[in-house]
Image (cartoon, rainbow, N blue to C red; front, side, top):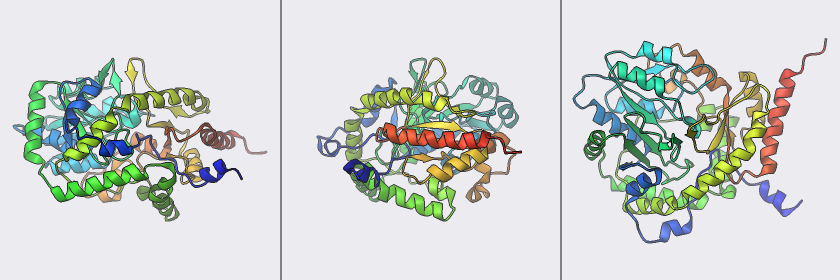
Length: 415
């Protein structure tokens, strides 16, 4: 056995392509103006840094509810459960909206049905680095005088018509959590279209986000650990082992990391973590270019798969490529693929396990809803990592597995 094969046998590909933190990022002189640097990077005039994408959403909702009697927030029926807890944290009510068929985007007809004069905001999502079409969402929001908040947690750097996403609606936010491209281990950035909203968000941040040195000290230690362990060899132990343990128990929610709590940590980000982010930000343009080039090489192989929808960019949109989002022909084919590849150390996983009404721990917080398209999307979707550590040989192993499962599904039974 060659040295390469021995090393490959103990490596773990992360589920998304995160920018590794280098030793120099931790040790170089402090640059505490991360929000300004991040705003400049995506070409916006102003941005605010918070301790997580969820905290950004709390700040945005807190600002929007000031002076308004409206208390309902519309969210996609397939999205991160933390969105629900952010809405509840602000004393607001969640209304789930179904998706369009074979899409992660909100269904316009369903959206019109759930919006009314109590709707404060609508939160569409740019999922897996892809750029959603928001034209109809914004038109519907304007008809009922609701705000639009773009959930771009996984899409920092994505653009629409040469402009950063997050500015077509009234506000938007990004996440810098572990593995989400640029990472502060935990962190988030909010942006807004006009100065009035920017000022309201800045004021809401001062009012809603306290200083908690003990939590921030823990985040600093976690960021240092992330810098050391976000590598193919140690990831087998810190990510791979817990994943496979959850799979052996049949706990898909735990395997994906969908187990969330209503207790949202809110605290200020320290100067040191802001400095680390500034240092890493200097490499992000080249990193995104490398991911885009790799995606361009690999998308044709995925596009050849019979009956599989591979999400890409529409004309005029330029997403980012942390992973590939696929919609399989059926739940059976998706499950067959996951049986062979989930836990195989190749970076294949699921985005979210369920539609929101189907998480047991959310039953007390949101009403049951008829959301067949969201449930279908949850049942048929999977993601493939676009990490630069996933070499061509292992990527072709994934493609071959997909082909084998699809061929078996299409082969007629003998008569």
